[in-house]
Length: 359
Image 1: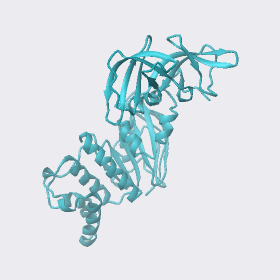
Image 2 (image 1 turned 180 degrees about the vertical axis):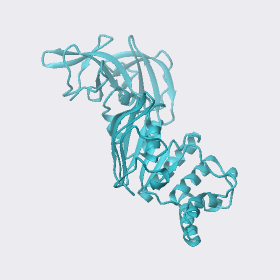
Image 3 (image 1 turned 90 degrees about the vertical axis):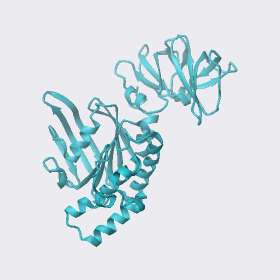
Image 4 (image 1 turned 120 degrees about the vertical axis):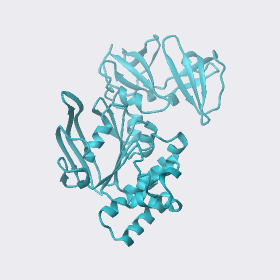
């Protein structure tokens, strides 16, 4: 195992920059997830760590070595791709031990390592089968097993679950988390799926436009997003965003919503009188009632039953809101609803820069 340090890394294709001065330190044994929309640079960064893409400037260290000029095979890493990349004419056993055979590993040692990896991944009964006879989830396990037997310093995962259906993705997330717990190998995982990021990561690196937006634990990004991009990308259902202006009323600081309604500002929030802001509130923090118990009035536009709870879409005079409630409610469309926006649950961002206001 080894730490991975990415220092001032930039990447351009000709005159087009795709990564801008990325600095990131990944600790030995840490599981870090790179998350962001398509084209944000996360896969390019992963491929640069793997040696599959060159670096325009900066340095990448794996352990004590600067690996900028090292070939992928000399970096002592293993990569799991979105496509399983299995040899169709080989059995599961031969796919898993292929790299060991290239290294001329003794047969007894090779059999032991493959058997141990197959046992961890539930592949014991599939070792003599060909990939075409396996399900998508089983093939991805074989691809992971092929990486495990190499006992690398780091695992790199490039959207490995994208080709699986929802239930298999859920199962494989659990398998990957258990695997990391058992092996403790430094891992970098790329995904555009924020649910995968939240459930797998020790730390998340949120990226957009080739720039690292925020680095932190999943709850750091969820509870204290540093800007509007992170607030909107992390969380499902997505955060509500409302236009507003900061106001002072004597000793009290208020937020004037675009509807003209006013609510208390969160304690210690910065900003100045008259500053245009964007107010964010998570759907589960919107308090609703059909009994006229609330600060504001709206009406039901849509109800989405989720099993675990219900997403209620509210219409108001100036903005739309989503509320998530754990009850299995079924409000008819058009039902009048009262709602509250608790000050302690608000996230306040500068309207011009999109950055979170200091507190």
